Image 1 (cartoon, rainbow, N blue to C red):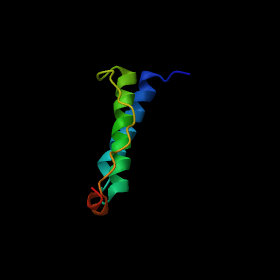
Image 2 (image 1 turned 90 degrees about the horizontal axis):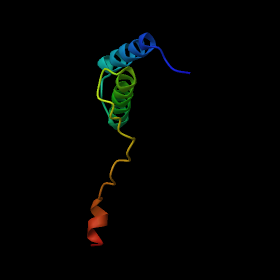
Image 3 (image 1 turned 30 degrees about the horizontal axis):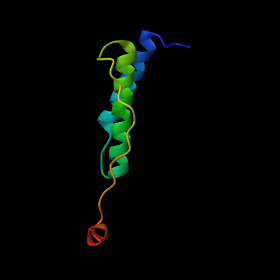
Image 4 (image 1 turned 60 degrees about the horizontal axis):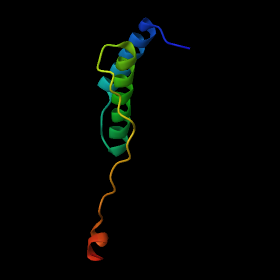
Length: 72
Protein backbone atom coordinates (compact mmCIF):
# COMPACT_ATOMS: atom_id res chain seq x y z
CA UNK A 1 0.00 0.00 0.00
CA UNK A 2 1.46 3.33 -1.07
CA UNK A 3 1.23 6.48 1.00
CA UNK A 4 -0.38 9.61 -0.39
CA UNK A 5 1.65 12.80 -0.77
CA UNK A 6 -0.38 14.40 2.02
CA UNK A 7 0.35 11.49 4.38
CA UNK A 8 4.08 11.67 3.59
CA UNK A 9 4.13 15.44 4.17
CA UNK A 10 2.37 14.97 7.52
CA UNK A 11 4.90 12.33 8.54
CA UNK A 12 7.78 14.62 7.51
CA UNK A 13 6.29 17.40 9.65
CA UNK A 14 5.96 15.07 12.65
CA UNK A 15 9.54 13.83 12.30
CA UNK A 16 10.86 17.38 12.00
CA UNK A 17 8.91 18.42 15.10
CA UNK A 18 10.34 15.47 17.02
CA UNK A 19 13.88 16.38 15.89
CA UNK A 20 13.43 20.03 16.87
CA UNK A 21 12.31 19.13 20.41
CA UNK A 22 15.12 16.68 21.09
CA UNK A 23 17.84 17.48 23.59
CA UNK A 24 20.88 15.41 22.70
CA UNK A 25 22.56 14.55 25.97
CA UNK A 26 24.22 11.21 25.29
CA UNK A 27 25.11 8.74 22.57
CA UNK A 28 21.66 7.11 22.61
CA UNK A 29 20.01 10.47 21.98
CA UNK A 30 22.43 11.12 19.11
CA UNK A 31 21.61 7.72 17.60
CA UNK A 32 17.89 8.44 17.80
CA UNK A 33 18.34 11.88 16.23
CA UNK A 34 20.41 10.38 13.42
CA UNK A 35 17.77 7.68 12.82
CA UNK A 36 15.06 10.35 12.67
CA UNK A 37 17.10 12.38 10.16
CA UNK A 38 17.47 9.29 7.96
CA UNK A 39 13.73 8.68 8.29
CA UNK A 40 13.04 12.26 7.21
CA UNK A 41 15.38 11.86 4.23
CA UNK A 42 13.65 8.63 3.18
CA UNK A 43 10.24 10.28 3.42
CA UNK A 44 11.45 13.23 1.34
CA UNK A 45 12.79 10.79 -1.25
CA UNK A 46 9.43 9.01 -1.36
CA UNK A 47 7.68 12.35 -1.78
CA UNK A 48 10.04 13.48 -4.51
CA UNK A 49 11.04 16.65 -2.64
CA UNK A 50 14.69 15.66 -2.29
CA UNK A 51 17.27 13.65 -4.09
CA UNK A 52 16.25 10.02 -4.28
CA UNK A 53 19.52 8.79 -2.78
CA UNK A 54 18.83 7.00 0.44
CA UNK A 55 21.77 5.67 2.40
CA UNK A 56 21.58 2.32 4.06
CA UNK A 57 22.13 1.90 7.76
CA UNK A 58 25.80 1.48 8.56
CA UNK A 59 27.42 0.13 11.67
CA UNK A 60 29.73 2.62 13.34
CA UNK A 61 33.44 1.76 13.13
CA UNK A 62 34.84 0.00 16.16
CA UNK A 63 36.77 2.25 18.50
CA UNK A 64 40.33 1.26 19.33
CA UNK A 65 40.64 0.89 23.06
CA UNK A 66 43.80 1.79 24.90
CA UNK A 67 44.47 -1.84 25.85
CA UNK A 68 44.15 -2.84 22.18
CA UNK A 69 47.07 -0.54 21.30
CA UNK A 70 49.31 -2.21 23.88
CA UNK A 71 49.05 -5.49 21.97
CA UNK A 72 50.41 -3.90 18.78
